[in-house]
Length: 243
Image (cartoon, rainbow, N blue to C red; front, side, top):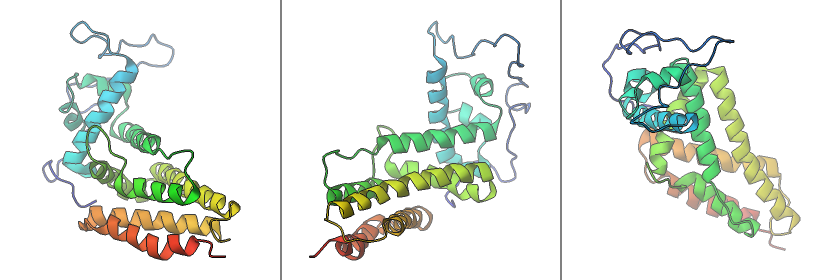
C-alpha cells in the first residue's frame, strides 16, 4: 500500500537481537524451565500471557498504521506499549514471527465481528454480509477503514510471501464461501434464480475486494458505495426469481 509513512529512508528493519533494541535475547531452549514472562509483574499486578499478547497486537496495529510494513521496526511497536519492549522478544522470534501472528489476529478479529441475524431471509442476509464487508463492522478503537488500511498493507506484501499468501487465500475462501452458502440457500427456497452459486460468490467477493482496494490505494472514498449500488442493480436484482 502506498500510504506508508514514518521511519527514515534507508533505515533497516531490526531483528530481535539488534543492539538498538535493548539487548540480545534468547527464548528458553527446549527442555529448560520457561523463563518468567517479563510482563508478569508490572506495578505489582499479574498480566496473563493472553492479555500481554493482546497488548502487543494492538501496539503492532498502531505502529503499522503509522509507519507501514516496510519501515516498521520492533522498537516502533515497543514505543506503542506501556509494557517493556522485552515482552515482544519473549513472545515472538522477530518481526516476521510477530507479523504472522498479527495477520492471524486481525483476520480472526474481523471475521468474528461479522454478525448476521440468524432468522434473516437470503435476500437480507446477502445484503448484510456485503454491507459489513464494504462498510463495517466498526470496532471500539480504530475505524473499519483504519483496519482495512493495515489489512491491505499486509495483503500487498503477500505476493512475495507464500505463508502469508496462504493465510489470505483461506480468508478469501471463507468470505466467498459465506456468500455461496447464502446464494445456495436462496435458490433452494425459491427466492433466487437457479444460478451457479460458486461463480456468483466469487463475483460478489471480487467486487468487494476491488472496491476496498480502490478506496484505500487510490483514495476513491465513494468506491464502496458505488460498488454497493452496482451490485444492487446488476447482481442482486438479476438474482431475483421472477416466475
